[in-house]
Image (cartoon, rainbow, N blue to C red; front, side, top):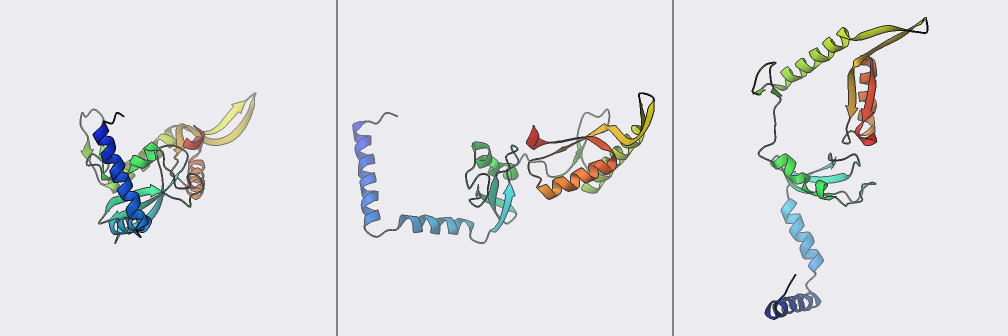
Length: 191
């Protein structure tokens, strides 16, 4: 950064004036806290977990009128202790993007375009496809070295967990996958 002599003098003068004002009784920290309070006044506070990588950093989100207005690292979170990486810091843009898909999209086989469907229809289609795939590829028993074993599984379905899932959710997802006979289980945190 190159500063000309006049720019340096202006910057030095502004810095000196700021320091002088802070010594005259202006409490800069209380002003910053008050400005922050004004910004999030009336907003609901939620805690969340960053979904960009498998670290699971904690975030504090402030939502007002259904829109995310403030996002910051959670200082009480054991992993990031209030800090956010560059990806986590721009997470603010994800829910506020005008390009964000808010309803399920379906592209029929052979079609060249996506169409919006309801959540109920999407869940029903997914459930039917899982059941169909499981039934078509079910392995009840397997013979190894002349010995037959009951295995009750399907190798046609895999299950992947995500970094935003907490331990309890991961436990339930694993139980569901095992009940379906899925043997290929993985989690993003191990990748």
